[in-house]
Picture 1 (tube, rainbow, N blue to C red):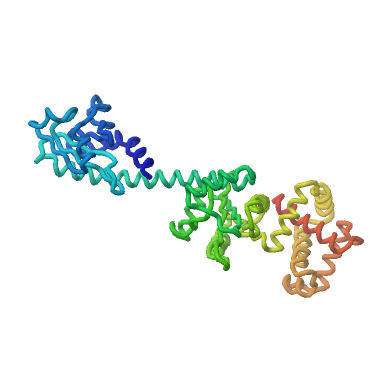
Picture 2 (picture 1 turned 60 degrees about the horizontal axis):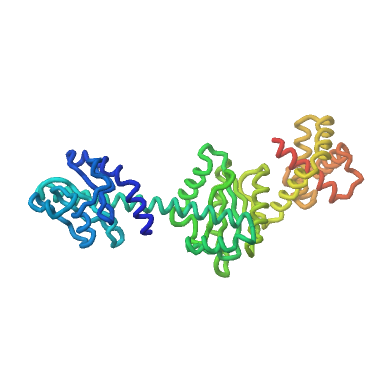
Length: 381
């Protein structure tokens, strides 16, 4: 914290004196570091000079008033008022204003208050940026899954006081909104509040235009507050998409959890998918089959169907088949859900099997190929 404070003080010192000079009617303003050196001044020629009055203020922690008669014993100083600047009980510098004591005492005190608050805000902002960068590095190390990185993971975790509590889940989000990743942060903050989105032991960051969160679940009972609220968000916003991995019992499983969640996220769809659910797993593996050598046959089935029936008919046949599969092969339940007669559904199913040449294959293979065709057309758009 001390190093960050000193760094911010040095980086912003000159900007501060130039910005505040007009507020004190152009009077000379100096900022001195803890060595008594002038690091910023409205009189640029004095930068780098030693200021004895500032050194005294630093050593005593009390204001130093320098009258004209005192100048011989204060090397590098001019008539004025010098106020120590405190941060967390430590002196981090001195602000000095040129002029007679009765004219500048109140001004110097106001500047001290102003600069203290200004630097405090800057320190907090810089610390947040630094912590964000370190969390991003820690996230990368976990996602790479290199066993040789364990020492680096432990070091970063100690610096951040952020230690995963297993089991964890990997949550990936993306948005098609113009605001992109920053928009995801805004949405999460809006619905959760700044102090509720992430726990102290969560690791998160952006990678490949995806927001990634490794979420810890300490204790015996797994909370679902985040997932439930996030699921509601996804239902209400078609541009927001989220996938939640299976539970990961150790660091090695995080890598696979991330790969599976990212792969499912790349497939068409909206809302939220949980890989702990069989339907999400089925969607993922169908997508993998299509991506790794299974698309050629499905493309042939797709062309065959389009050559045989109209666009409206093929949509009806596939939607009926999809509902039939969702009802676990129950003709009665599927017909009821579609609000058609069961004989109509049976006719349409047999018609689809006939067109695709799937009459004589086992029910499992028939369903697999038609599900792959439905998934292929969804990706095709």
